[in-house]
Image 1: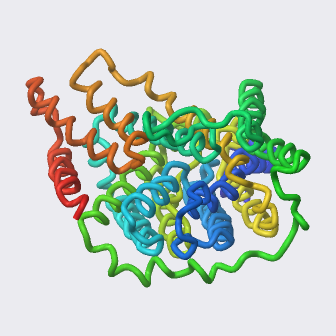
Image 2 (image 1 turned 135 degrees about the vertical axis):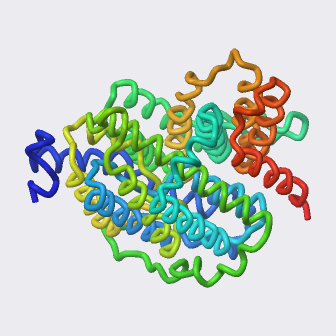
Length: 441
């Protein structure tokens, strides 16, 4: 075991790896509770219940997909990088695809499945480098930041901090109401924990908020903590059954967005965490193909189980900070996800006001890369800004990407830099023009 995971070469041991794996799990455990609430559109009270995905099934699917992804990453790529359904990707699934486009969650899962298969093919053929190089770095950064803004807006809206206003579209909500005050309390607690660099700050913040909510009667007290594992039957295999539903321009854009965001989110996280762990060699990531294969395989598995796109988690950096250096830590994280399936009764205490602080803080973390965008270059600034701002304002991640990717060739051509535009970008330009042309039909 030590030899397989290269403990001696990496200067690590079982104790460090187990502590690192547990630390990573605690840092990202919030996804077990946030993902079901997000995919089921709990923050949208007037959405028909018959069109909602089953929360219990998503909880189990989230745990199983995360466990599979972590263990695959640990065994195939041997990196201390954990995998779970991605924040932003689940928001796109729920708010843009199901709520915005009116596509069923079953068909959306089929879209995730197909994007996963494409990702697997790209990982096996090595075509991924060409795609990575085709998309300008500034647009990749803008997409991540835009998703961060969108997630934050969803959290603010769902909690009641931001409310509907017929005159101004949005305004401040009733800040004197109990649920809103509970969310504000949760934000303050989580911010303090993050400032103090407390490992698992987001998860602990949710826990403290839930306990406070139970004390004041705003959150239901669970009748039990440990219970039976919720059935997967409502979601299992729906991605395969509804494959015929994906043949439309709308679904093409959906699949491209799942693929695009998951692809670059994974690549960025892999490089960031590997750099922190000192695993990069000559500015390259060894076994990068294996890491992407593990990630893409978990997307396919997760879609069949019943959850949105999985991706590598930047929270893995907390495990690396605690000493994790090998894939053994990821295997440990995966085992903890399997054990977590027995704690489904805790879903009842994770209300939208408990999850809102997590969404808002994660959103804040996601906009950090904006500092790397060349804002002084107008031809870059415009498409990057529009990509970012249109996501929350149109309540659609896909629309933000589409607008930015349409404006990029326009600004670059009239700046006299047409030769710098990759042919793939022209292809995406046409696809997104068609997306808007057929959007309301």
